[in-house]
Length: 243
Image 1: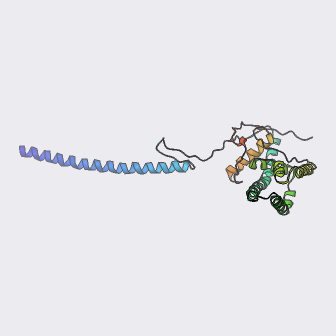
Image 2: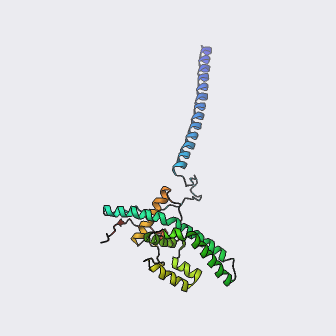
Image 3: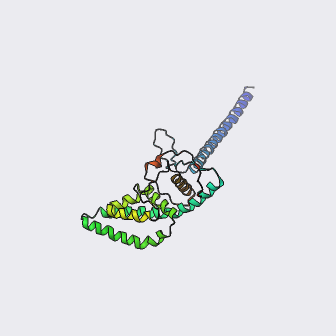
């Protein structure tokens, strides 16, 4: 009787030992599966929030890409929307020239800093101006008055100084005066500034640029103005028809 009881106990013990091994093995597999699932979730998270460093320790630094929040414009009439689309084409055409002007101005400023002689610096600037005019005058002449006005504003957006200020800095006040007079004959002002936070036309330019950057139609060039850090309210586009 006792031997039978011991045999039953041994059988139960063997069964429990096998179940324990199975349970441990199952938990081990579940642990691997859970860990793998966590890696997959993290990979999905990384792809979903590309541009973010996702970390597990809250006391570590998190580095994020620059986020630009700019409201989409609304339109009062169908004419306003058509005007906006027409104006977008003008902005697209003027923008590359503004970017080129920014790079040329920066290159010129870097070169000038290496020239100590005032006379040599003046001569160098004159030579560069003649070279730029020979290369780009014909293309600039093809711009319409609206495109020229947008170009002048974009130069201020990208460099922080007006076209008139750049001319004064490089060629002097007298030369800048004659450039202003010449431009005024075509109803163009060289001292135009860029204020998208207050001027409707500048707001349209910025809205067009931000949408183009986001969709990859234009290469982003950040504004150096303080207004680039403003939170812009949503604006309704309304253009008065010319009679």
